[in-house]
Image 1 (tube, one colour):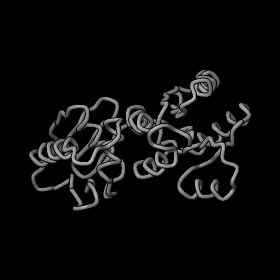
Image 2 (cartoon, helix red, strand yellow; image 1 turned 90 degrees about the horizontal axis):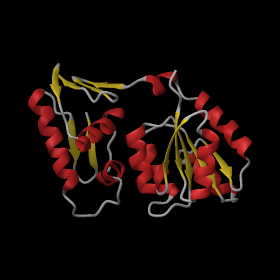
Image 3 (cartoon, helix red, strand yellow; image 1 turned 180 degrees about the horizontal axis):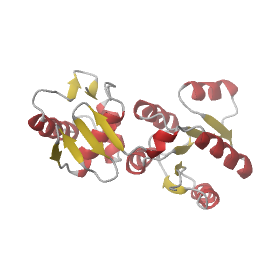
Image 4 (tube, helix red, strand yellow; image 1 turned 30 degrees about the vertical axis):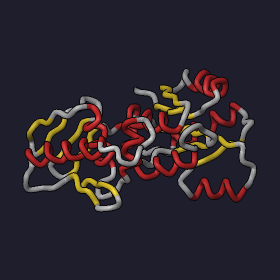
Length: 225
């Protein structure tokens, strides 16, 4: 039976190594040392749980949490040095599932990890196929079917498609999509995202011309309908 995957997002090498050493005997571990890499690793590994430090270089942990909640409901266990109860309440309201204040007890962390993983619906961990309308994507084999016809996409377009299909009808900001897929900060005026979305839209529409799946929402973002 496959083990759960945990993404550890922590910029301090010693803490990240400690967490990895403790959890690796029980789970598959992915890791990131900053917020941008965290979003990229999330898309690459499809973790069942994220352990998220708040004090990160680049994109802060709070921003990473907000972006994650735009694209997934995977549980997030926050590590924080914050002692202010109101700020902790704010974190929980923004989508964190649980938190531990630093310094933390390793046994308590392991127990909280187990609790969060027990609460993950079985289908969330086991399902590898996304199906929306006439579009079906196998996230493991990268097999794509549109109206029964096979479609092959380059890596970035495939990642964009799977993100959009996980939550159909939800509007994603292009900045969030870019930082998740490319793993680097979005720069205003960069046309890379628009080119990839246009290519993706054209390829799907060519196989299913009666349905418009990838739609831009002017001034807001893009969604999969």
